Every structure is written in structure tokens, then in C-alpha cells.
Amino acid sequence: MKTYFLIILCLQSIFLFTQPSIGTNGFQFEISDTGINTKFSEIGSGFFKEKLIMVSSKKIGALAKIDPNTNEAYKELYCLDTLGNGILANPLLFSRILNTNDSEGQISFSPNQKTIYYSRSSKTNSLEFKLYKAILEEGSHGNWVNEELLSINRENVSIENPFVNAKCDKLYFSANMPNAIGGYDIYVSDINPDGTLSTPKNLGKKINTSFDDKHPYVFMDNAYLFFSSKGHEGMGGFDFFASEISKDGYKTPINMGNTINSRYDEVAYFNVNKSTGYFSSNRPNGKGGFDIYYFTTNHIKQTVEGKILDFNTKEVLPNAIVILKDRNQIEIDQLITGKDGTYRFDVAPLESYTITTKKSNFKDGLFDFASYRSETTTYNKDLEIAATDPVITEVNNELRIISENIYFDFAKHDIKKESHIILNKIIKVLNDHPKIKIAINAHTDNKGSDAFNLNLSEKRAKSTLNYLIKNGISKNRLSSKGCGERKPLIDCKNSCSKKDLQTNRRVEFVILNTAL
Image (cartoon, rainbow, N blue to C red; front, side, top):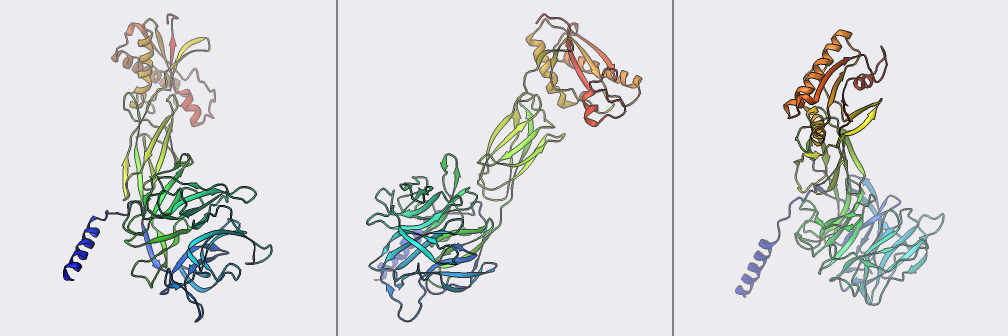
């Protein structure tokens, strides 16, 4: 006998040692008791008119019959007041119509709470649940009428854990149908406009496993499918998983981490809002059976940051528009880069995003980004974008090379580093067309005296010419001239806006011959 127990203990130790190590996985939960748990099972099942609905085997009266499959009383539906901070109170039987002599299962309401989907098993076969629907009688507070056994039920199939999505066009549930991948799988049926259900569709091998997968739930934003599974990599028993919902279907589920999951069974996860909710577990520190727990989520802070760079020169790019979008291409944040060309966005752990960039005379950039870590993290991601080619076109009877403006510091003629990118594009045009000659005409705004501006523009034109020569363009092909403030594009005189002044400060590249 001692040898037998030693073998059992060794097997248990091996089992515990080989369990996968699951961290927070990007989910940070704080768990608290709800104040209503008993030695019997309590499992939450959503809300109706601001009251929490639970399924429980609480005994009501001395003659309550015992289910031989669970050794507890047959389950009934209760409603409870919510007192704040997750505390529940005053459990009362939910409905004299829906509570029967059979065993009740979980329920789900349409968003307008006028339709209820519920599961029920008979005393003769308490492990096989059938799916029903009922309608709330107009003007009543809980009189359910037109009870209907739904057409998707099958003989020897148990349909459990119904859940209606926020659009009321899909009904999720778990079932042990003949085409299940293993045990119980999660299915979905479309809710047709006339209220009927389409043929159930198995959610496939990304969601379902060769073990039991149950308790589907989708929050109002339709971003994630939450469910309980024994088959995906977990800590033991049923664990909670989250699968991102995209236009292409369901993504690989993520274990929701060791701040909510345990070695025991976690089931019936649902939110009150984005940061709070309830779930049920049979973990040993409870009162007995399944208990209902309250959770709050603390968002792990992560950021993605970097610089917007020119693809060829790797120079930083100011004045670039950078946009962060979520997996559904909904814009989350937007900014314009400063002189240092940097951007920074807050992101959520284990999410996928796209970052788009827009800048004058540059091609739009589109970059995928995934926050692959679960702890507080800063991701570094520089984004390189390619400049568009300059355009040769006629302006005011002159043939010009049109490109982005050349920038100088105020009252100075040194070319700013960011303008090297634009000048390199001019160099490319000149190299592609080795016979053309150009005049470099520099213009200023009207701030300062005419003589000062004329001198400044001549120096700026000369600086531009020298850059082109330094980078391989023959000076025989170039000439430069300062025009000062005499040829403004916007003749705003003494009422110029900052934008007007910026527009008038420019360098033009005029083609002097037509030998292209």
C-alpha cells in the first residue's frame, strides 16, 4: 500500500512539474469575493435589468431533489442585486416560468433584453441540455412567453452556454455535436431577421481542440472572443483564453494569464465594462463547488516609439503625419513629428496595429506592428519612407523642377540637414538628364529690409548651388540668383500669416534649356 501511494505522489509531482509556466500574458487582474458564495455551486450568467443572473444548485426548501450526476440540487436561476465593488446580495429565484422541475443552465439576453436564450436539461438526463428561446411579454417586468425549443437541437447532443452578441445577429454556444473536434466545441449560428437560426458553424481548429472548449463570450466592441478551454496550453482544468476577432476570422487564442487562471476550472467570464466583470471558478479557496468572483483589470502600459526616416539618406523627417490604427483599421491616435522626427504611441499588450505615415513629397508608408510582450515595455521601431520623384513641369512660362521646399533657419543661409533629402532628389534629376542646365533662384519673405533680404537670398542660392557641386554636379550646369522679397507668391504686404511667410520663403529650380 505504501508503494502504491508513493507512485501516486510521484506521478502528481511529475504532473505539476511538467505543467507549462504561464505568466501574466499581458492581462493583469485583481480578484475579489462577491459575498454570496455558498458550499453549493454558483455560476454567473450575465445581467438582466441591472441584476446579475446566476445558475446555482442552492437548496430551496427541505425537499430539494439531488442530481445524482453532481450530488447537488438541480440547478435553478437566481437574480442578485449589485451593491458596488463587485459585491452581490439578495439572491431571489429569477423567473417562475423559466425555473422548472428540471435543471436550468446558463442564459443570454438580446441587447434590448426582450428575447432570452436559455438551456435546460431534464431530470432523467441532467447532462444533456437543450436550447430554448422565449419573448418578454410587452409591458411586463419578467413574464416570459412563447417558449420555443429551437431547431438546432439534436438528439443525444447537449447545447450549453448560449451567448448573443451586441449586434444580435450571432448566437454562440458550446455543444458536443457529431462533427466536434473533440468533446465540446464552440459553435455560432446567425440570427436571421425573422428570429430563426442558421445551421451551426464550428469555429474551427484555432478555437476548438480535442478537449472541451466552452463558455463563449464577446464584449460589446466585438474585438475578442473569450472562452474556457481544457485543450489549449494552460495551467490546468478550464482556463480562460482570448482570441482576437479580425475580418479574416479568429486569431490564435492567448491564455489570459496567471492573475485570473489557476490549476482548477475557470468558466463563465463576462464583463460589466471594459475594466470590471465576473467569472466563476472551483478553486479551493472558495466556499465550495463553483463560486462567483469579481475582477478588475489593470492595463499594462506599453509604448511604441521611433523616428520617421528618409529611406535613402536615413535623415530624420519632421512634419510627417503618423497615424496609429487598430486591427480593424480604426484610428486610435495621430501626431505630427517635430524637428527630431520622433513619434510615440501608447499600445496594449499582445495586440496588432498598423502605423501609416504621410508627408508632402514622400510616398505614404504602411507598417504592421504587433505588441508581442506581456509586461511593461517600450518597443523601438524606426519607420523609413521613400521620397517621391521630383516633377518637371511648366510654371509661369518657365520649365521647373518641382520638389519640396528647401529649409533654412531664420535669417540664416546654412541649409538645414532635413533639406539634404530634397536636394538629393534634384541631384537625381540632374544625373538622369545630364544635358540640362538650371538656375537656382532663392526668395525670402518680407520680414526685414529689402537690402538684407536680397543679400540673404543670394547667400541661400549660393549655398544650394555649392551643395549640388559638392555632390557631383558640374558648376557649368548651374547658376544662382537671389531675388529677395521682390517676387512673393502671396502678396500679403504687412498682413502676412505664418503660412504666407513660409510659402514666400522658397528656392526654385528653373530649367534653362530644353535638352532633356
